Image 1 (tube, rainbow, N blue to C red):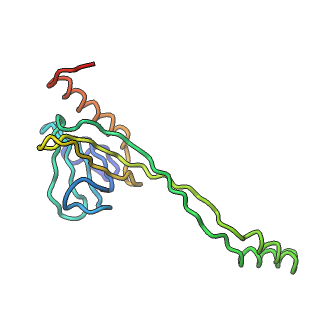
Image 2 (image 1 turned 135 degrees about the vertical axis):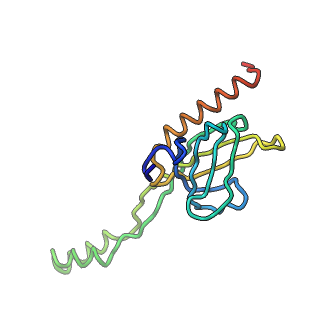
Length: 164
């Protein structure tokens, strides 16, 4: 299967993400592949570049999956020298002063980061969290989330009593 495919070599749906937090030994920013292993009935997490141990999480352990966003506001300084030079060329000395003055201050630009957060029940019956950043190489992540939700909901309803 190719790099842009929805499925990995085993034919399981997969997505490439950047690891953020939740697995000991995995560093922040590590490129990982998450795949839905239907044969073993688990979510498989493996490093794509660095050799790290593969991590498996049974569908029945997963309590929820969600995608959240975080907005960063990036401030950039405006170029006063560049604006003064352009103003001076176009309108002379007065243009240079006005052009330079228009460059005083900061320009704000916002950037949104998206994260995939998976909640699960550990062996010690504690609720734990795995978090991954959705990056440019994270193609087909929305269909991955939908399929994983269907797997964990199906497993939960089959194995446990439901109280409303």
